[in-house]
Every structure is written in structure tokens, then in C-alpha cells.
Length: 316
Image 1 (cartoon, helix red, strand yellow):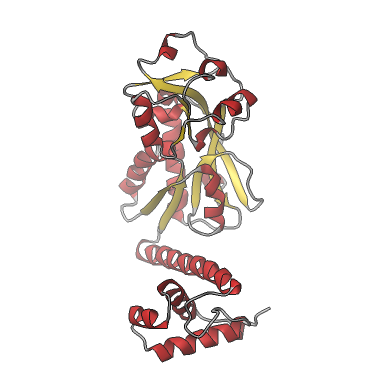
Image 2 (spheres, one colour; image 1 turned 60 degrees about the vertical axis):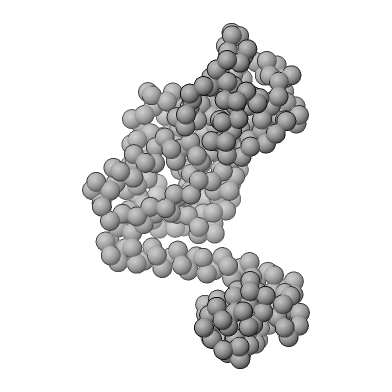
């Protein structure tokens, strides 16, 4: 274990990343405005403090296996340092801070803009950075310090992550408005799309019904972007399954058809790291999002689940 007095500083990791990404000492020296000899000395000191070589040869063009590990860790360390500094500087300016939030696309469109406007009416200096992110990546983004909070579907997660359910949203079969499916009686069974061209996306991964899984295995294409998927469906390229809330992203030319499957739903909630103290602006923003979700429930047809406000479960 490294003693604190032997720990390398952030400058050493910046130099190492610059050399690794630039392919050598000369390129890193030019990028950082330092001499090649200074870069070499910094790398030597870093290797001595870590206890193993980072590069395979003197030219510093190829990383050792240890070097590849250190490169991944150094990138995360530098990103976390930059994010933390931005948060501290923002808080110093306005005593409110900023919020980095991950969100599934439907939530980022249906609720976040109204929540941001609401917060900025009372806290005009509040800063927010929204990252559209699939639910399966949200926990890692929280653990890595990339985001402060996340709005995502309920999935297995590490013990360090808390999940507060906010609403329950049904999944629908989605097709073009002139598709023959629209003439059938709803709710539909999965067998109604068994022989149809199916477009796969990651949003319905929580549904484990064998009949749907069999259909997805024969998918004709995969489209990750919800916007691109909706465009493909409008063109009649196939059918797919999406959360009902996705109607807010533009349902023109499309039909969302209910499904006869009691497991065809997702639970969307607020994720946060259990041991992370949240700044006032983040807690205020999370509460504003919940208020918007409450107000829009009658419009977008989802079931509210949470009985408490986010300020009651985000650490302060």
C-alpha cells in the first residue's frame, strides 16, 4: 500500500495520459508546453512511486499491461478531479452548486426541462448538465463520479447505490399509424408481432417474457437512439416495444398499442450514491423533477409510486 507521502500528484498522471494518448514523449511535451527531459523525469518518478513500469520501451510508445490499467484509472481520476473542482467553484460562486444528472431519454424530455426552468426561477445561478444515458449504465456513472444523480429504470444495482421509485410506466407495441396492427383489438398479445419485422432497442430489457425474448432474437435491426427508432417506425420498417412515456418524444404518424402482459412495465426512479452528500442545488432540482412528475401524471398515463419528496432521501 502506498504511503501518503509517496503518492504521485495529479500533474504526474496528466503527463502520463498525455504521453500514452500522444504516442510518445515529444508529442506530450509539445502539448503540455514542457521539455522532453522534464516529461521523462516525471514518468520515471511516477513509475517509481507506483512500483512498476508503465511502458514497454524507452520510446514510450507501447504500454505494459500495468500501464493500460493505470491509464484507465488516471483518466477516471482526472475526470473526477475536474468535475469536483467545477462543483466546488460553482458552489463558491452562488452557494448552490451545479448538478450532473444522467437520465433515460423519455424522462429527460418529458420532465427535466420544466424542472430546470422551475429551479432557475428561484436559483438563477444553478447549473445543470444532463447526460442522456441508458438505465444499465447509470449505476457505474454514479460510482465513477460522472454524475450526481440519475433517473433510470429499476435494474439490479450495487449496494452502494440507492433507488427511490417515482413512477410505473407501461410498455406498448409501437408501429406506424397505418399498420394493420392498429385495426386489431387491444390489448395485443405478443403473438400479434411474432411474424413481423422487429426492431430491437434496449428500453424494454426489464421484460423477460419468453415469447417476447423469442421475437427479439429474430430482430431485423437494432436502433439505440429512441429518436432514430421512432423515425424508422414511421417509415414502416417494422414494429418495436417502447415505454408509453416515449409518446412525448413525438407520436405523430405512430400508434402506441397496449400489451396483454402483466410484466410489461418499468419502474423509473431516482438513483444516487448512498454515501454522497448532495449540494442544495441538486436536492432542489431533484425535488422539482418530482413535482413535475406529479403534475404530469394525468397527461402521460403513468402511475405515481413515491410517497415522499426527494429531499427526504438525498443525503445533505
